[in-house]
Image 1 (spheres, rainbow, N blue to C red):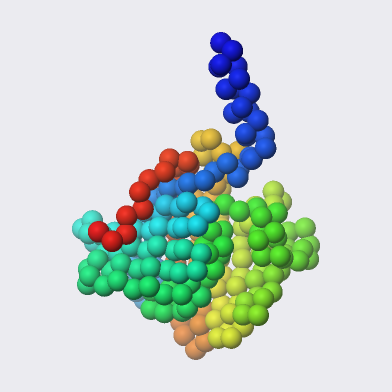
Image 2: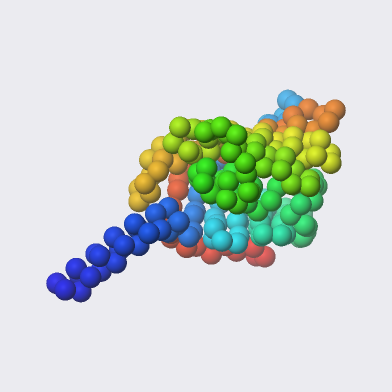
Amino acid sequence: MNKLFILLILISFQNTIFGNDSIYFIKMKAEMTVSYMDQKETYSTQIRSNLKDSIWMSFTGFMGIEGGRLLIMKDSIFLKNKIDNIFEAMDIKSENQYIPFPLSFNDFKYIFFNCDKTKVNEIFKSKEIEDTLSVAEDSFTHRKFIFDTKNQIKSFQILNKESLNFCEGFIETFKPIPNYKENWAYNRRLKIVKQNENPLEIIFNIEKIELNNPQNMPFSR
């Protein structure tokens, strides 16, 4: 009985101190739809992340065939094209045929996972303009974050000051999930606009979420 009592106290203490930061691993299943002009492709996507340093994605297309895997690290992105058996490694700030807009590792984190105003302002050294608006500026990028009344990020805008390419995102459809005190956004939309080109839209509709159930993030095989 004494051991059980002590264990309950420790669990309560951990939840009080760490709150949502006690989440260290996230696993999601989502439907990803990519739209460009009159073309539209849909993939079944697995997303896994050790929140500190890595995000892993697997893409499965027509007839359940896995077409590729993506590994996003703090400074690099690794791609495995399983259809053509091609491996590529690139700087995370580069823009290429696979990554249509250069995003930082922290950008990927708030695009895929929940992030509140306090964390965003701390990570990006953002300046709070209004209760629901913050901006951040560096040598290459201008960012604008918009939050809801609960301080949860609900949309953002990123301008690449060199290319003038623009990325806009909307984080929507908040629902409760087990063992998490805040609602989770089940729909995430990205709209990427390049100069003199038609916009590209990427939509993630999340179907399943698991927290703190670590899974392998296989890449090479």
